[in-house]
Image (cartoon, rainbow, N blue to C red; front, side, top):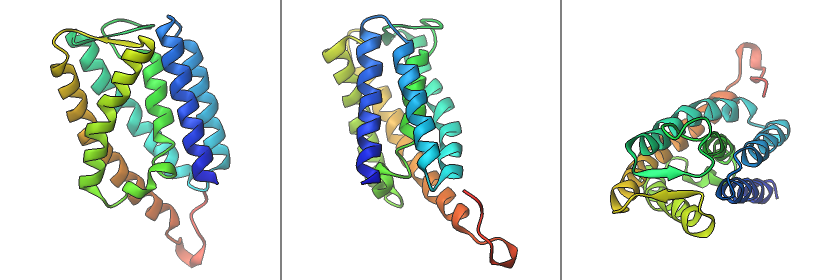
Length: 184
């Protein structure tokens, strides 16, 4: 049941962020992402791993989406703080996405090729959905360089994040001296 709630919560954040961004509003997505993150950290049994993943996902998203924006290959709606950087709402999505790596996406742990394939296909498809469905992002013609960048970025980021999630879950479960467990 926790996995289903995690999945549904993230999907709600995604829809809130892209629909609001398509209407020129960055903050509804940021607030939805923040609420989801606070909720996930409050109920998570893997708080340490989740928090560390968030700290890795944020600069990863800033790099992937920032490069896309800076290159002009894509233009994000609600581009605050600047059209040359990843918008705050998409960085919120990256942070919320990090909360799925020890829950909904746990099945990718230890499956590097599957995680890479999942990222390389799923990442660009999510952006296409955001573009076509709600106008949250617009790709410069021709679209293929932006989609190739997203496939590469997500194809690398997904297995790295999944492997980090698996590693940090193991570290959090290791006993301390005297048999006590690491607090979560």
